[in-house]
Image (tube, rainbow, N blue to C red; front, side, top):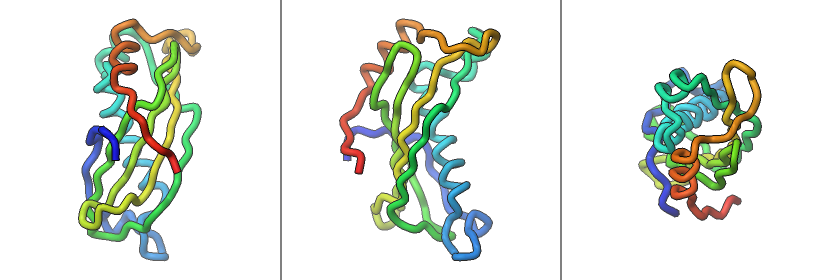
Amino acid sequence: MTDLAIAYRGVVYPWHCDHIGHMNVMWYVGKFDEGTWHLLASVGLTPTYLREQKRGMVAVNQNLTYKRELRAGDLITVRSGVLEMKEKSIRFLHEMRNEMTGEVAAIAVCTGVHTDSESRRACPFPLDIMERGQAMIVEYAIP
């Protein structure tokens, strides 16, 4: 494992599970999304910044790899890191682990684009956010 930061901790509740008995894919996406907002805030893309500067973040790509089942009662942690920071986009990853077994349950690799909320067009990150994001880049062998 690399220097991924904890972006989400939670538990799998029975209502997260489908008729097969494991956590349904919609909940993986939801938990990764919650981790996304913590990761983006650590780069400087906080809700306050987005509101005050009339900026937004738009998801343009998300690739999920499911490795192990999660079941009701499992404790999970999502660790996240920046893979690449470009002028107007950020590529990052999330790794979801079963905290009791240490096994990786799923991996998400996502790309988000920084936008002007009024024009609805991509726009450059401010220099401080760009520098913070680049300083947070991690090496990760994506399976």
